[in-house]
Amino acid sequence: MTDDASAQAAAGTAEGQGPVEIDEELARHLENKREELFEKFEIADAFPPEVLEEAEERTEGVQQEIEDELDEREDLRDLTTWTTDPVDAQDFDDAISIRENEETFTLWVHIADVTHYVHPESAMWAEAVERGNTVYLPAYTIHMLPPTLAETVCSLVPEEDRLAHTVEMELDKEHLSYESIDIYKSVIHSNERLTYTQTEDRLEEPDADLHDEISLVFDVADRMHEQRKEDGSLVLNPRRDRAHTIIEECMLKANKAVTHELMWNRGVEAMYRVHPQPTPDEWDKALVEIQDLDGVSIPGEAWDDPRKAVNATLEQAPGRQLGKIQWAVMKVMPRAKYMSDPFGGHHALNFDIYGHFTSPIRRLSDLINHWIVYTNDVPEDLAALCSRASDKQKAAEQCEREYKGFLQEVGLDPDAVNNRGIEVVDDPDEE
Image 1 (cartoon, rainbow, N blue to C red):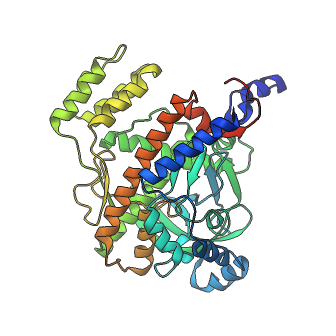
Image 2 (cartoon, helix red, strand yellow):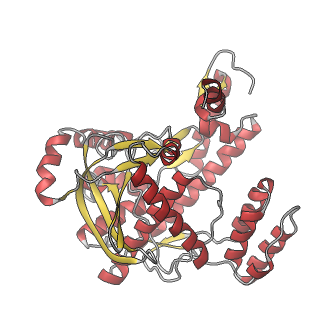
Image 3 (cartoon, rainbow, N blue to C red):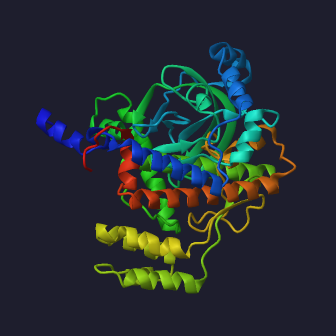
């Protein structure tokens, strides 16, 4: 690519466009609106001093603490490992490794070992229960745990040892089914931190570092993606790039593996993710609405399975109609909930049993499941914790929806604000 072409391509990216510029008066309006929404949805922005102090204390003496842990953990520092995140990510809480064997693939998903630092006796745990999850507003984040934790000891930064909770999966080459699942505490050493764009570039460059590993894991992830669709998993965003496919499928595979281990091998309660299905009448309503869209046609053979019908339609529909198709489906979808009883399964994913494990820095459910996996002990108030996590997620989603609506009211594009951030200036350029 020529320098001119590179410059032109960069100009179309969020980094190339730069932040959305606003004046001080509008910045005050946004701040006031956030405070109003935080009060309405009972969302705490600032952390109590004792929580911040505890977080600071846990980030001291990091390397010595890791050295002290080596005898009690699997040492995976020689295993080729890398992270993949958005360009503006501040913490990297998941990493992957892969190896091809004669009859299997070994896939490792490494998650930052948050529960080593945040446990039920800590102030940070109590605060996480209070908050329930991280809340993401365009250009503004309200964290579940103190950011200093996510940006230091719980960030799998490259070229440094870190404590992790690893899900090691042996996958049959033909069907990608689990031959074995092993979940354990580990010490890892990430070779590199990649963005999604860099991952795409590595796939295109045969001589680039990690090209072989990334190509292998994409081939496996792509097969997992197609397999899920064939099995009836709903895929509302069918046009993702290869980097997103890798991360999404690997995380789903790890979450499912952990849930399988907890339910079938240990028979313990956990924070399972249960997603009820719409009634047949609700599905029919959604499909008729989709069929009536201009330029959209549901393939005749797909009508018997609504999820497969939506998948097939999204793949063929013009881009301008994707949002309307997705909205028609979302309107009839019941809300997913966290429950200690997994039965009923996850309708959208078409998984009999499912739960979260891969994001303990931002979701209470994952934090608690990490603790259950490690201790094989279930909190006495698990049912109440499930209800709280469900309620806080609902509040976060409603808060985000209302804040985006307000941004539109004051003439700002929520997507542009989210992707590019905001800068307060004396005389903002016109957007």
